[in-house]
Length: 337
Image (tube, rainbow, N blue to C red; front, top):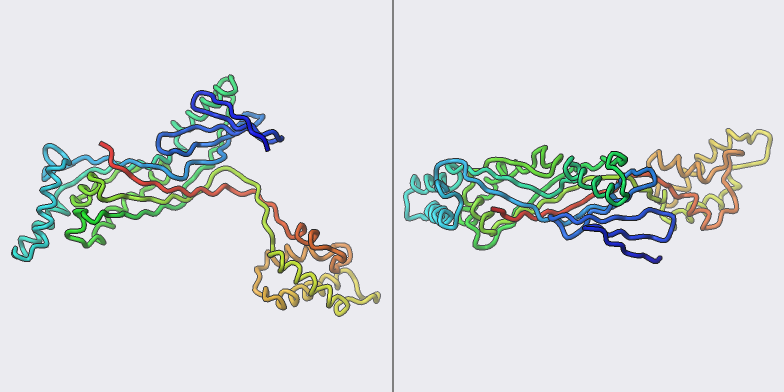
């Protein structure tokens, strides 16, 4: 297949010399991978692919009087937090002092965290940007376009990776972080790709500030529509099943007047079930069993369809479905002033 590239502002389109669509790419600042979309003959704009590796941002703002007041989160204020963390585990201090120092590190300083993943594909501002570019490409008014709005995020999980010199390692007990770091997973992160929450974990705050802790997040969701072809069975299973049924064909059917279509249908069902058991597929789900039955048994006489070669069998066992396009992305967050 031959392709020709056309560059238009921040776009380039890949023209495919077949009957299908033209792909347009738009770069976003959060990723080196483009947003790819098409415009059909009815001016319907649809996403083809979306960036899967993004750089998110973490913004930190002191929200109380404490170690970060009044100058905010700085190298100097984090040095104070590190000292207090060391005091909290220093057995030369009485337990009461150690506990107070730990509380100062993990309870007394409130910081507002603003986390932005860069996954904004269903936000009105981003969608408007796509439609404006579509209008520019086609040289017609933006009101002529519709953008597929099926993008959604269904699942998010995260981990925090720590440098060996992270302040958070001094006290340890990082399981204490989870009730606060789980606030990353708000509904606004699912719907808009960003969230704001408060955190009192000064050692983790300082590690995020210095880059000695990295939040990494995985997003799973879906968008658009795609046609997929799958098979009810593996190729070797299809052939073995059919051959087994052919081998025992005469055991099930006869040519008497009592061998009606309805009777044959019943026999064929038993016949198929037994043949599946012989190739260790006896626990097949009912929906799939019915689909196989419909492809191997003639609706006219209720008997197995004869003279099917391997290619015919493979084709008969294919299922074409229209499904959403799966979306899986990884976001690494960086501190942003």
